[in-house]
Image (tube, rainbow, N blue to C red; front, side):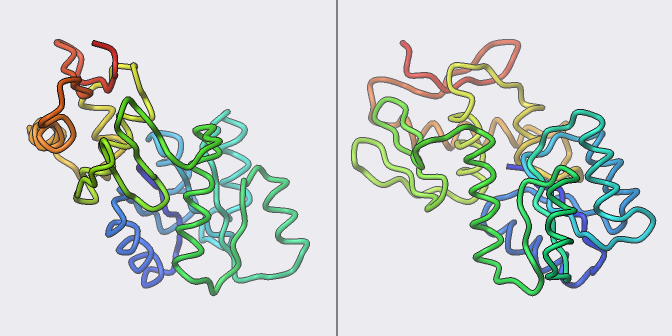
Length: 224
């Protein structure tokens, strides 16, 4: 999952990015409203974390402009202001949730997971494909009741494939959703990760779930 973090407090931004990266998220940073608006319009994200008080363009303006462009990505707004009117203003501008500073990282992560579940229309916390079960919240993967240990990046790629079950995705789509914009898209790292996932997910199982779509990319499907 790829997140855009628009926060001008660089120390806080780095702390949030580090925590999210350790949880398997790819994070792009913007330190003012203009840069954040540009990235929000030109790149694809699963969630945007948007500070209210920003230089050049404030968070409310950024949020409104993104919504005016019909960009429906979930937006979590941050602010140091706790007054009710500020929360209402943010939500009226198109934000999906609101978090007041200071906050605990575990709460931020919980809010992000809730937005992701809502955005992907999940009614259940687990994604089930054949005998494979993925818990996006606890980040637990099992197949046939056997636990599978994945690195944060492996989990992110697997989750993206699973959320697009039966839909072929390109290598570019995978990188856009699981790496930040500094990633070298010409490397073969996606193929390396897919090969590792196949060993962990499909190894020892007759029904393979991760398939190559020649000329396109990959697809996760229980169909034989």
